[in-house]
Amino acid sequence: MIYLDYQATTPLAPEAREAMLPWLGGPDTPGFANPHSAHRPGRAAAAAIEIAREQVAGLLPPGGRVIFTSGATEAINLAMKGAAQRGEDDVVAVSAIEHAAVLDCAEAMRGETEVRVLSVDGEGLVAGDLVMPERLRLAAVMQVNNEIGTIQPVAALAGAAHRAGGLFLCDAVQGAGKLAAPGEADMIAISGHKLHGPKGIGALWLRDGIALDPLMHGGGQEQGLRSGTLSPALCAGFGAAASLAAERLEADTAHVRTLWQSARAILSRWTLNGSGEQRWHGNLNVRLDGLDVARLMSDLRDIAFSAGSACASGSGRPSHVLKAIGLADRSAKASIRLGFGRYTALSDLEDACARIEAAAAAQGV
Image (cartoon, rainbow, N blue to C red; front, side, top):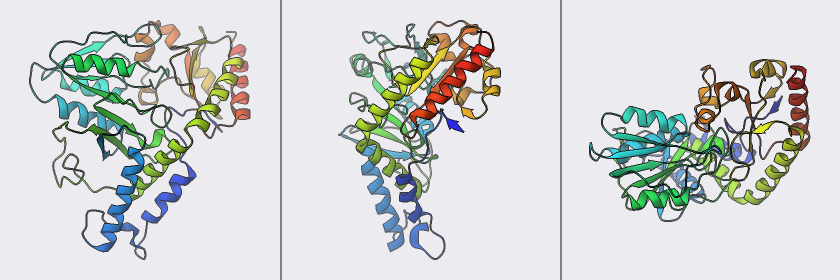
């Protein structure tokens, strides 16, 4: 199997797995202890979590705190709902190509809060000189789009939100560990399994001085904002993956650039979806009009790639992202997404792209 679906999830780094093992202990080892207990094993587990918190914070701006969550979806909900419950006249603004975690959360808030959708251009970019709506409480724009890989002008958009009196939330799931953190944001959501860490854990970075209302009530274990017992194993794996991403940033970026150039050369007749310049090169979303993507995927079952966002797969609907950049349904449904990164071998990617090209040609397109 050649795995080319890095936007859906990334392979677990061996270093992350090793960091987790001591905290998956059985009855004869202390690693199973509750990190919120006051005894020695509990304090040891708590210390491991705090080390992981510092490692994750190393990917994020100074002047804030890291709140562990079950993933980026929970982090986004905590940020949006926790910040927006201030007044019925407040406005929440989200881009048209946000992940479902943002769009569905915003939709659930309609009726209590006014929601505005920020349009994108044909390259999938929100205008950096956009004037945000009046009465803005919160604007949410992602750093890197999960479907087409475009990198948004988040610094300019955060400035626009601040000038309108609002906060700025950035979904940095696809950019964390790959790009510089969006330092102008007030809140940043990231996910462990998108940067070679374990699934089931993410984080919300909250700038100092910003208050949120909690979504869940209980023990308030995570700084009063998130109740529930933390997993030392998941935290340790997340922390190790974050630390490794920081160490390997330049090497990973160079490797991805080489992969991109090779893939693009082989799939040269395919049309690129999204900006060719403002993008993360580990995401290659391309289309070939007339292509039967379902047949292509059936013919290439030993290559793992996507017909769109993994979170929307199986719906039968064209991607909302591809429609937002102006593609007709037919073109949107003729698009595929290849995702690659640190552990992708150049030879595997070249083989996969050559076979994708050959299979498409066999369809007569």
